[in-house]
Image (cartoon, rainbow, N blue to C red; front, side, top):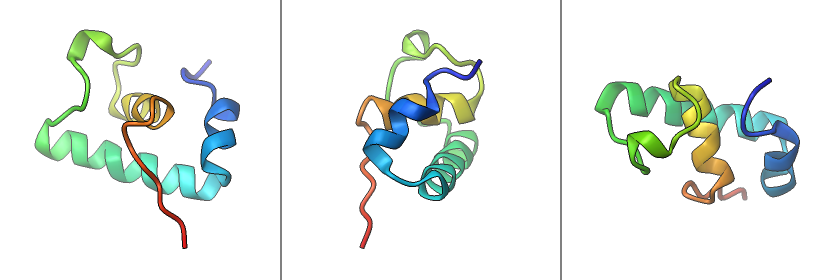
Length: 66
């Protein structure tokens, strides 16, 4: 099972497509730069995509839709 729950994040984001786009973009950014917004031991996930979802859930990434 994926952590964090996609259903919980969708309450904040509102669209699966936006969530996928933002999470994949942040995941690639983490791979390229190595920059993470939390300490390494605070993440539950080991992979970047899971870590990006955790950052979105915790409100560290703000999504602006027009």
